[in-house]
Amino acid sequence: MFLAKHGAPLISTEWATSVQNSGTKNEEDRGAFKTPTRRDVARTAPYMHDGSLKTLMEVIDYYDKGGTPNPHLSSDMRPLQLTEQEKADLVEFMKSLSGEMPAFEEPKLPN
Figure 1 (tube, helix red, strand yellow):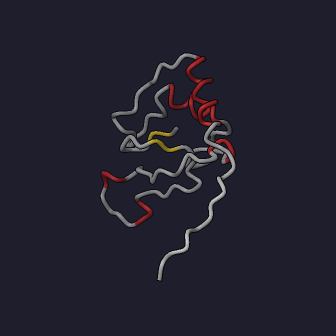
Figure 2: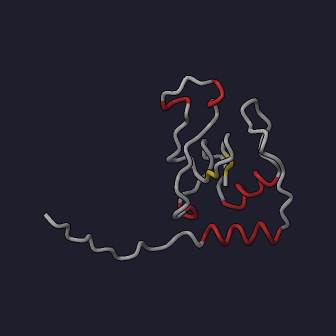
C-alpha cells in the first residue's frame, strides 16, 4: 500500500514503471509510479521500488509513519496513525486478494 506521488495506491513496484523512465520530461512527474494490480500481493514480496520491504506489515508500518521525507514526496502523504489491530486487519485484507483464478471459457464470437 504504497502511496505514489499522486496518491494512487501502489503495493509492489516489480511491475511499476517510473513516469520519468517512461518518456515524460515533466519535472512534476518525477517520482510518480504506475499503479500495479493488488491481485496476489501477498505472493509478490519484496515490496517498494527497491525491494527494501520484505513483508506487507513492513509496508503498512512504513506508510503508517508517513513514509520517508524526500523532495518528491506528495504533500498528501502523512502519518496514518493506525492501531495495531487496524494494521493486522489490513494485512489480512491484502492476503485475501490472493487466490486461484476462476475457470473461464472464452466465448465463441460470431463471424
